[in-house]
Length: 522
Ligand code: AHR
Image 1 (cartoon, rainbow, N blue to C red):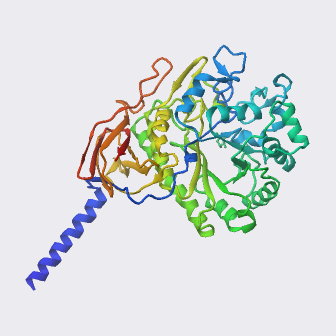
Image 2 (image 1 turned 120 degrees about the horizontal axis):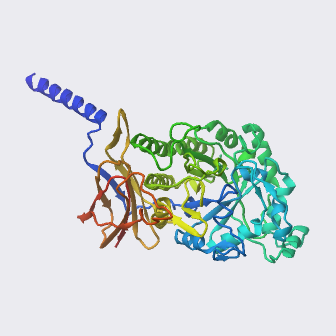
Image 3 (image 1 turned 60 degrees about the vertical axis):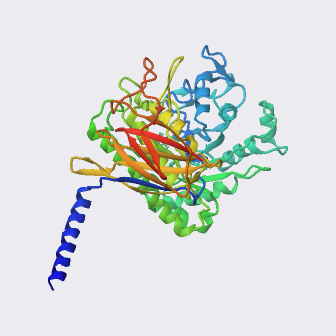
């Protein structure tokens, strides 16, 4: 009797202690288990994609300066930006928008540059563009970058014929009015186009359509998007933004709609406070840092919501989720055109990038494409330019560090970690993913979201042992550390040595607010 009372007492004591420990998150051992000998799905390199819209100074100035510019260029595309982008191994580039895509008429952007019709960019600052950057210039850019083209067609204000002819102009080798026109414009052979989107945000700037209306329109447009020769288009249907799973349900539950696309797009931007006042990109406090991290972690919930619906109708996972716009969206830099969405980039954005890329890696079985918004001079850019100067942002460095995951196989991992607590709110303090590449090298990427304390993570690496381990870390003293045109190297990766490896267990001590990537070689 006494023994059983004692047992009940011990049980109740443990139950109370464990539940309050969980509530208070007294997790003191941070653990990231990596199963190295049972690789999972390939992490599509295309989740490391980028986005270049006719918006502000992204295309004009940021990428395209024209042949006559004093800024050194190749075919009108600035060399400094080109060379820097090659370093991060851009797999695909989305163009021409965004909202701009559903106002863009591709025929205005071909032929002799001086004779091209201009376009007023109604969504972004109302500026008049001369269309000197068009189809040939974009395809040249992708060739120079060595990446695939992701073209976004115009559903909102375009016609089925216009879109069908664009695909024909780009990819057909047959003799036809479109291919003759292409040849007259100097391009003999067709290009390869991998991704083609059927409209952008057609629930909003792309025509304010309902989900059912768009579903029918998409079926119609898609019918005429031919695969010419060996070019197989991966058609991307416009999906919803954020948590709007109803739109996904409409597109997925109709078999006739489902068979017309290979990928479904979703957009999710991390916003602090409200759309009307999103806070400064550079001048922020810990509350805003915390809110940003919290919003970034929501990306996983967004993906899971849409995945759940896709899994019901497509359990074989033949359709990809295409997160073709993501990133932090803050107020524009003071004194800049509000329509140009120009924002600086800090260490906070670097941690954001790591969280997102880890999340996409972890969902490699469904997320097949993702595009950071945007590549140069707009929102969470990897590059900023000012006349002949260029600066690589903290976000750029994360893309450089994470490129090792491209086309590697995802490793199964299990993360148990302490919370990052701010006031009465708490979020996970660590983000991570791991992969093994075709040469058997394992890469582990981790981020410490806590700006106040370093965190030690124990990583048992199961199934294999390693002879050589190296690492890189990106961090800085201040949450808002940034690279400027005057001081371009304030935030950059350095060698990382704060780890030990004993009996198959890697123990990593990450500085506060940092991103770490480790390479393990057998
Ligand atoms: O990236 C800026 C804009 O955000 C895009 O043009 C649009 O698709 C989204 O609303």
